[in-house]
Image 1: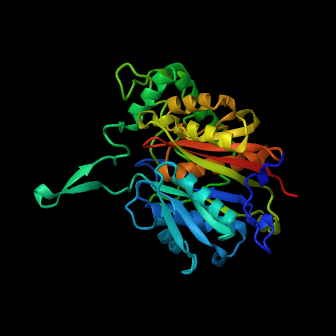
Image 2 (image 1 turned 135 degrees about the vertical axis):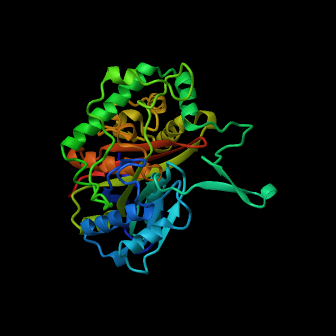
Image 3 (image 1 turned 135 degrees about the horizontal axis):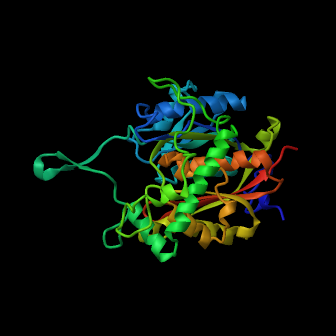
Length: 405
């Protein structure tokens, strides 16, 4: 069975189906740096601009042909970072840009939106992805009418009404660990695996080939700062619980906030073929889902299961999976719910090792699949990108690898 034709868009006279089959052609990213680390003085727009320029240069496509630049961002200061960055990158004034927010699902949502636009025939060339500068994110405050507009600063926005529950992410991760029976040992083992795999990929030069240098006052930043090669089981076991007394979620088995940007080129299969592309990810389908905000960590599993039901795909048909590792507890619970073996997931490490630049993390999932598939996927191999999102949401996308003809 060919999944490329599942749910095909209606044909229009004079338009061949390949003209509207969305594919991921290539992608680039910045290094991921810990919050207030190597990229602490670089704004979101300045992180994004060199990546936009690099993917265009790699593609050989004319900047004037870009239909839109679609970028996810979660904790920025508003405005339109996509437009600001594309102009900073030297793209023509005629190229539009739009910034979207589905919190840590924003980067994946941006790519899905670009794929849907190609699928609908609205355009055939998009730059899509995400960016986050957690280091330079603006302070947030409400104006209090009782004090003539004096600012009331707060750390996080609300995602759910109080009568339902709106827990902090770490608290929710503890709840998921308890409800789904994910013990401390599994969480620490998974975290250690993430660091090991990310370190191996870094040493093999996998990441260097995709990272765009970002200039800072201390020189260019060209390597991820997160993976810890010296991490051991005994060291992980020493980390105390962070969010609940006697709990199992620690700084060692959780992700760290990070700065970074990821951009991919979304085009049609026909255009990719004309460029002589060396293989690409074909977009099959994607769905969002909602769950109890108190169990927000399994939102990605709900989306994945919904996607399986809609496409007829089973977990056993997936060659590989990328799932954002906000916390080991919720990642493992989600993989369990979808019946996905751990060894099939995050084969180059994940956010626990590399960090979590919220708006870019969903796009990083797609770039990781592209990297892995290009290195060794068989033709027709199916893969899944999925993540859980604040407020009790999940997002999942299904892809198929297509080798060059």
